[in-house]
Image (cartoon, rainbow over all chains, first blue to last red; front, side, top):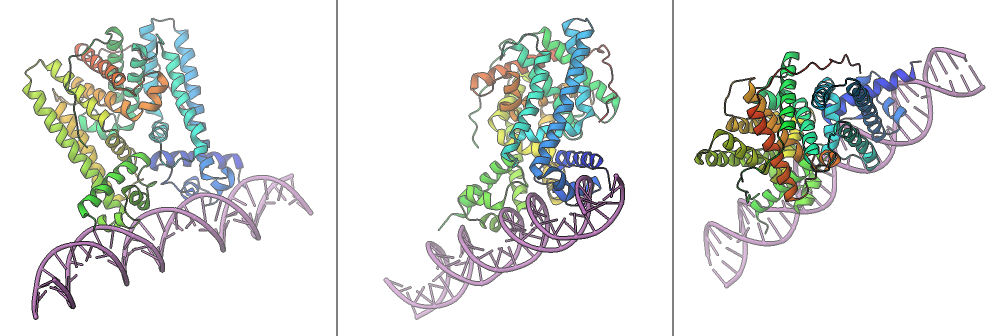
Length: 217
Length: 217
DNA sequence: ACCCACTTGCTTGCTGTTCAGCAAGTATGG
DNA sequence: CCATACTTGCTGAACAGCAAGCAAGTGGGT
């Protein structure tokens, strides 16, 4: 009958899409089977359990990320440019990568939000996802003092690239930043890179005090 | 006999916490009842349906946000400082507010992420959540030219403040930015504000090209 | 004949919703 | 003061639907 590998990867694809779109709990194995063009029970047949399927999906995502990070790294090293330019290039590449894989971003975002009834045995998978991020961190770090400006800037880079993927057609649209077309994204990318460059040049100074809120609720 | 208002708000509190922590689908009305200290059937008794309960939770969140935004706005107007300082203060306040209400952030983040995790009749509630964000956007905006530098910077501000709440003990920790204590958060806030100030000073220039990826997957 | 990929039927447990009922109050009338 | 009728807040059992997991199949290729 049908090819097992083809079915496996079809199921993996379908599951990744559905988990990213609806979340783990809201996705049934029957849905996955339907989307993958197989029967209700086939996902369970191949992966044993829903949790294992999810784990496989996360693993595959992390592998892809690791690969992309690695290739991006070697590329950045080869070009013998200034650290600022290398960082700017890396930021741009990261931005492009995330925007090319929104499904991955949503998947990891859901995992990071956590809770969502992820069985305990998946915690390793989630940790792997975090490690992939941490790897990016290591590659880019200039001054690895923890809690220092380098870490802060790195976190800012991640924030800037991450957010506009997740909230491209909600928040971004609401505040007047279109991200639908390629030129739109290029504009956004240019802004992010400019911000990062500016942040590289200007180290943090103590800001004027902002009143602390003793908020209720 | 029990007080109805007390029960209602206990249920609302419990539901908000659980929806934020686990997501909509992964939270059962029985869980809500248990956490609220009432019986399994009471949430349904008061709110009619799970969807309506969720809607009520979102509504309450949005009200709180609107109120905070309004008060923050008047405060920013009163102090007759320079635009840069006003913006810096607003960013700081926004940062503080989000970090003081992580539950709200996670709730809205889930709403923004989750297309079909929620039944269709809740779409209005989700839209309301997004509008709350958009409202914040409007209040903070200085120069409303759409797609221009102001919008870009505003989106960056939202990204920077938002991200560190959601990923405080995952990504941030992984890249070496602690956010557990108050001084930690103050350091982060100072960095964000410094970045924004730097971005205010340096308008975007065309960046050196970063090779476009023809990525598979 | 046998394996391999896959399907279908069934069980079991959980979840939302409904509902009859109960306990604690409040109003009414004597 | 008390008894009766009625309302309100809340409970827990019953019901129906769905989803995961298992087991017994089907069927084609070798």
